[in-house]
Length: 271
Ligand SMILES: [Zn+2]
Image (cartoon, rainbow, N blue to C red; front, side):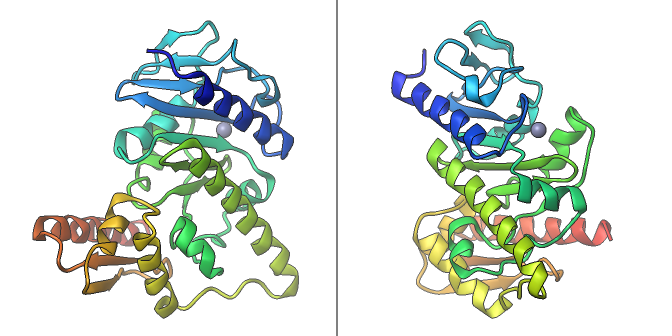
């Protein structure tokens, strides 16, 4: 199976947009789009995103082996698979080094971990975490894999940004929003810094996100119930708030609660 021309063109256009917006330099950045359970369209390695075209796009299987095209697969495929393997609602992943987001990632700033613009909570969720630095390879994959179930974008310390979505456009818009928020947070530092939203404001925004069908499967579950309960997850300061529909089957509810407990333990354990 070969990806359709329209989808290939979309990957080419997105690659060039990453370059044109200054979100990549040299051969930085990469894109994958899931075509089937074991087939992905991918940008080539060692190529400027400005120069991606129909001749150098490749297709790889779930192990990263090239199955179509002539260019070599990029080495950061494992980051993309960390997302694709965990999220069957995701079909596209984009990684780049947009300057403001990457500056926060490289300085260890927590500025994007708490939301400060209401609309962004609806669009991308309550937090954009920074995963700890890990050397490229399995360690970097594992570091990213620890957050992909809970968020739709992340910063990677001393590296860059990565976002994913149901399709390429959604992944791109999320990466754009990450960079936009990073820029705003950075500019606000000159006047005292951003004021995070109160926890009480975040819960209804997450419900709106769920009702709009944005975000991950667990968020969507929250939109279906009349009596949505808000579970404020310990510990602060991440203040990740999860909405759970009480009318959903208890197995689904317990899965969400279990995830939150695991996450809370992980965060406590890391302190
Ligand atoms: Zn990179």
